[in-house]
Image (cartoon, rainbow, N blue to C red; front, side, top):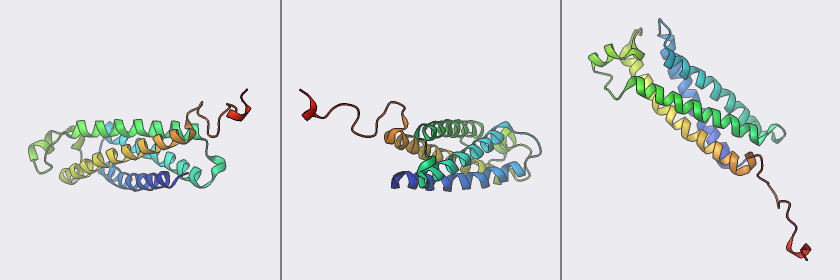
Length: 165
């Protein structure tokens, strides 16, 4: 794997770690089920699995299957996009200091400290978009390295010009 892909995986680690802490803290304060935050945690767990396989494939070439990496990156990209959209749509673009907004936002109900959880969810939304960009980069890099089924890595199957008569 290239240095660029390893750097992208490093950035993915940073965003996944931050998202795990933020969404985990929001879920720890919940007293009832809230599907957007539950989906966000599902997405984070899936991203951890993709990241672990991606990093292992970066250092152990024998387990690197480009099409599997491409598919996993594609699913992680899709899941992070959906999580970012869902959290953004549930939060809206309001100030976390506005008491009327804090009481009306369904995603913030059932929390002890709604202002803190509002800020954590806003940060999580931003980090989901950063993670989305990193997964797009990984997916493109994997595709360019031969993740598409028909793409050839070497000189291809055509004969050299000296062999053509």
